[in-house]
Image (cartoon, rainbow, N blue to C red; front, side, top):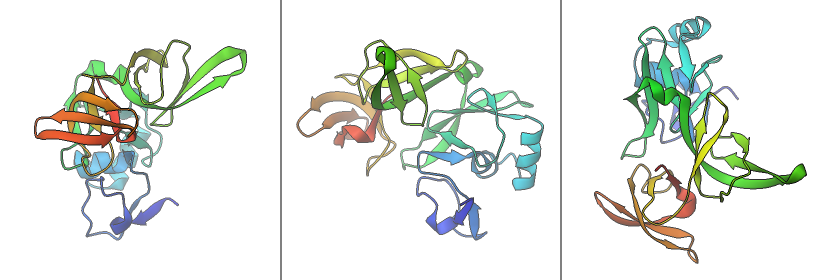
Length: 213
């Protein structure tokens, strides 16, 4: 399905719920390029203008030219507007909605994502399955719920950000979505962490956080 009713769009999309009846389809892990360019950055008035920019290869998603306006910009992906030479990072606001913040051009080549699965392949190779749908062969030590820094130029994992005490984490699901803080304690039996943020300390399920530093 390419379209859905605005009222049924993911709650973390920063769109008006009234107005045009339908909006381009996507999922709650990111926002479609159309919404990012038209509704968030407001540098296009309508879908036609977004499609025209895509045809001119004027929009890059994590250092690659966007091909369709339905492409999803996942959390911590970058969107670059080629004519203005401006780069934006997809973030989560404290209200739990996706937003875009201006980033450095050098950020285009790096991306953090959470490890949600680990698979042993033939030849004793290990595959890391990531939160944003990417998969990489990586034979150094890592665990599910760690995060990795991806080198987008080399299309490979650069380093691992382990789930551990004092690691910086972002809440990506649940009622505390958007909050950031340091991990004070890890409760293995409850599969949760105690996250120390500017606004207080919260108990959050490990599956609802992403290590970002």
